[in-house]
Length: 177
Image (cartoon, rainbow, N blue to C red):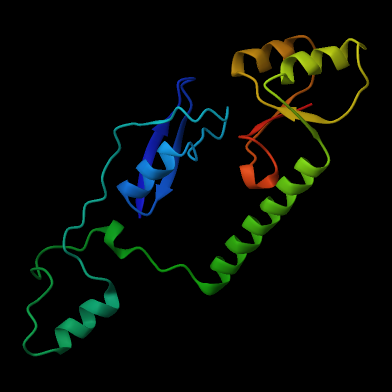
């Protein structure tokens, strides 16, 4: 698993997890990697600290290796095992909780998508029209820049940034008014 530090042209910094560098490049070319803050798919990698494997084996593997007469020690006895190499495995209960949270988030995302109108790149314009009584009030979602969202807030127009997956019926994140 590769954990990458990513950023978008608006300066948002976020983390992405990918199976490999090829997986990251493939998703990037297909515009599947998007900034969770603004939805921009013009994402680039930042320098990030690598995970360094100092040769430590997981505790079970290390114990099995020591019980085998012909096995060489995993590392010299004088070298301490780094704390990062002793990462505990995630419990079944924690895995279930994580799955439940992910499932709830997906359901919530779908509910938002089903109960709002996607106005796309015209979000700020449509939110202003509703605020000033030029069109009927309704729940909308769409995309806008951070600058434009701040301007809407300064005008007293309530907006909430959302990071909705495209699978929820959304074309790349958005805001909700």
